[in-house]
Image (cartoon, rainbow over the protein chains, first blue to last red):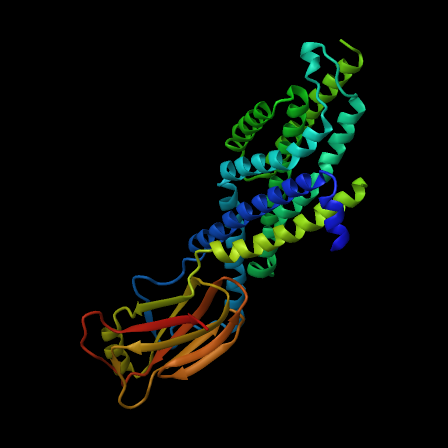
Length: 251
Length: 149
């Protein structure tokens, strides 16, 4: 504990620690909020078998009674249905999720990117800047910062799966986790590269939010969304590499 | 100051804090209720009981109940209203979601331990032909009351 405090509070690193922790808590709690709300809605929509208007009766011997195992299996089927509805309902909040994720990524990356004091801004104004290698090293490190954010996205889903939806095939939850993680990756790449390219945090935020809203509004709850997000982040990466190459060639 | 140590610190602190916040958030923000109460009407019980008395058979009502409810230890109570049984009493059989069967006459009351935020059980009510339906506004019904302990 002592070395944690000494190491994180010495230097200016505590700002970075604070930023990443704040972002992780933000992302984790908004995912938990959406999950808690969706599981209730999914169970209302997926399990409506209670007779509201009255139960039908019959004389004994008219139809054979089913064994208790049948109802245990029926319960598993209902849970399976609720799980698939749960993924879809969580993803129906995609604009809330992507807005909070974008702001969280910005908070997590800003002190770090600011401290690196590098950008390709002089590409436009032909001024002196830091070296390109620092930018790329910073990019790799920013992916390291991404890991706790990844963990905080997956944490509520794992808790829902373990505590509330145990014993089911988790294909729907797996797809949800893949979509959310690829969204987070895209937002990280977008924030870092736009901040590096323009050197302005407001432009980076606006661009990232526009990108997130423009994509997540169109994409449904399917595997195609994951490929779109991954492709978009590769495209942004390509733009960054081209800019770095122009910078190296002193265009 | 090494980057490796910093990353480890960041990772550990944010991991534990986000685990805490998501565990707290899931229980705090869930709109699941801690208790549930329902009265399920028995359809055309009067005619069925009269007919059952003629052919000397009992009347069976069987239905499923599914409620979203907070997980935990739950006491379930079930009884029948609006039916008078002078000779032989009705029986309520409840099959819970883990396959256990609870049998009883009059008030059925038992405690189940649930892990999921759902409550699912199958109710089978057997009414012997000697019973009669009491005159009432809503007709006879099964009252089910579930409460988290």
